[in-house]
Image (tube, rainbow, N blue to C red; front, side, top):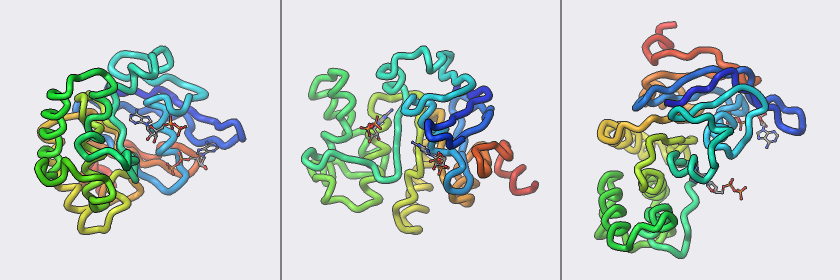
Length: 228
Ligand code: ADP
Ligand code: ADP
């Protein structure tokens, strides 16, 4: 579903962030990218939705070479969740979740129904949270909104960059549990970045271990990596 074939990224200042990276994520698979800060995880993610252009290699998402894809169409099929999700402060939670459906022209009633369904899916109460504004939610609840928003138009692929890292350990663990249940239902193809090896082992179907210099050290199941 996602294939990276000898992908490299050298930034204009000469920093080599990713080197000859080859990996694939199967349909419905959750692959975690793990490794120390600065080893190229975020750059790798951003090359998949073309926020960053590779300087070498090839990336194919659902049979389409991303360098040939229209970026807007590409991103419509790729949900993106980051560490501190940026919500629109003057829009309600329901409106924030429905941003992309609104952009693509869904009628109001359909947006409303989809937002309510998604709130339930991520453990928010539509009657309570739907009409609130972002500052009226906790950090963990805002991350849930981020996940709901990313799922709004049902993209087959999700990119998640440290989505649960900014919340305290108890909430993080709860979000991980809920996310695993959610993934059982929705079965998205997911690239998930974390620097937390425990999180990687808990969530990943497979784990790609990066090392300094943007190289892949290991790519295997959690059991194989722990046993290695
Ligand atoms: P990680 O997500 O693993 O922390 P990043 O992909 O953010 O790593 O960064 C990989 C390397 O690329 C780091 O050395 C970082 O400083 C560098 N880097 C990231 N973005 C840029 C940029 N826009 N320009 C130059 N160097 C960058
Ligand atoms: P800028 O260079 O102005 O920061 P970006 O292209 O980096 O613009 O993205 C702007 C915002 O859009 C970012 O906050 C980012 O999180 C969000 N964004 C970027 N790509 C996607 C995507 N594929 N899906 C959802 N949100 C995205």
